[in-house]
Image (cartoon, rainbow, N blue to C red; front, side, top):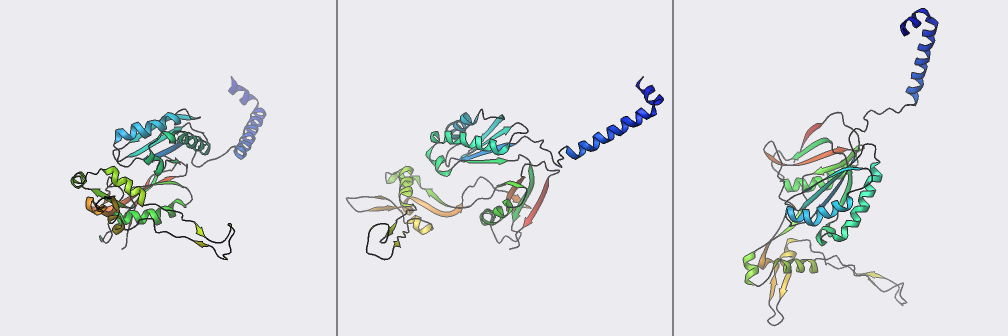
Length: 312
């Protein structure tokens, strides 16, 4: 028996014990120690928006095209996607544990770039966002006005402009998912008036795209062209529409024979409101803004939830 050896030879037992202790001390000084080891598979999130499309159209034109190119990325474990009726396409690519998330994000970005030429024009114009994201939520925040002095649209716009950027700069925060929306100029078309004038929504869209542009007008005089002028002047144009009255006075059709003009206010109602009406969060019976924070690729010990009140 091994026990008999240690009993009959105590010196040997002491030497073996000392060797084990020394090996343990050496191992403790060389082995890496992590307070929050990576036990959650790293993920990369791909999001896109197809405004005005239903879930089936988004899935067939956007989600499937991106999935076809992203599938097979080195180190990928599986892929999941979600297409909503509000025109949102969300794809999550999950990689094996230990995969370098920075390299994985770059690989996914390159494959999304291959799929972009096949996507609808409006999706390409709004852009496809690729981000590395921890699937675990670290903290949930709720911003609301207890006295009702500010509505949910104001709170959402305020949070996206001021609070979101400040929280993203906090060390350890990887990404923020905000339910709040920015302000948006919404055009509500009247189908009866459009039909009576022989117009379609495509005519209104084309007029908006043509007359609401940010144009670089260039400059006049000076170098680099040979000129006797000593100064160079930049040309500033007021080509971008940013007020409700400007949208209402936008000309959507003209009749060359009679000279009659159809304004946007004649066939639609224009208002400054939310970008999306699909989310309506509440806190204590009051409209609010919700934001979820994910940590920067660490395994959080527990979930936290806090509510912040607007003092206005």
